[in-house]
Length: 414
Ligand code: AMP
Ligand code: GLY
Image 1 (cartoon, rainbow, N blue to C red):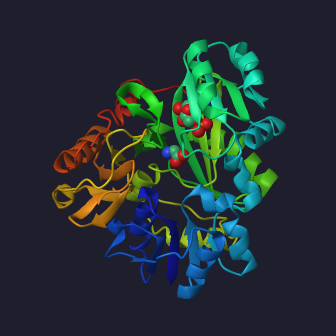
Image 2: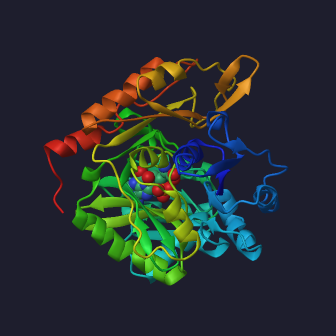
């Protein structure tokens, strides 16, 4: 069986790592990254378009393709693969609009009566200025299109909101600020049936205590205690099933949820696995993932279940100095083997092989992932791995999973 994973980040390394454990499977990645050496064949692409991705799948005659990032999905990679008769896990171009346009997804949520923050859509800065105060402060401003997790600004007051308007520009959503704990709820869908993955929690802000600008995600953990069965049922019934029913969604539907005192509300949809959520998800999954992916691609997910280890998994992202703003690359990375010797799994996100060996090549560089019998142990193991690794200017949050520790002391009611 030949499986192709599209993408080059930490999420894709985690997928490749998991699929390489499936019996009788050859894993390929397009374009992949240096962390995959030894477990997958990385295919150089002749360009970044849908046609080049299809050509890569045809070259190796892939039995199944799994798409990591959103950009090829929004560009219609799934439509192109299906037209060519190739199995692929992902939504078609139309359903990818749930992530590709905030305006589209907010209108969809309202039409389907799916709980979400109150909002208005504005077309320009003048209208945005008028709407800013409408929901009080803090207020949330979201650029309409794809922005790699950086198109959202939470403004504490009017001055911050007006300052953000200069940067976001164009069409945007202005919405009510929701309070509560964030949960990433991801389900594998085949157009009709749905298999939920375990719940995860991301850490979007760059600094400890959720301070500083939003990033693509500075760390995530996967733990059975994040959601009660009843909360998970609630999200399935009120968010996931209605969305799949309305759109015939295929692939990974990611609902970014805020667990508010009035119940779970959708912050955003993504149409793919989360990054870094996938790192602890793949680490904690105890069953073979390939049969579920194959069933999803063939529209026969019904009855599929995924198994998870009891203990949690934690991923801490090590980033370049300056991220999510501008940063330098080309810093030598050391200590990965030491982290692995301590039991951590080190997923590469932004690395390359340079003149001096492995070096930094992106904002998020590594996702250091580990498990344990309980959350405190898993967090400890992940940070032991982090401490073993060094590159110039490396920065990471010191509090990944801490909210979970607090939750163990004080269970949230459902
Ligand atoms: P989004 O890309 O829409 O998920 O927004 C990125 C991050 O901004 C979310 O993960 C939240 O941390 C924060 N955020 C977005 N919308 C809201 C909201 N309505 N209330 C509070 N925080 C929000
Ligand atoms: N970690 C959030 C995302 O993948 O969008």
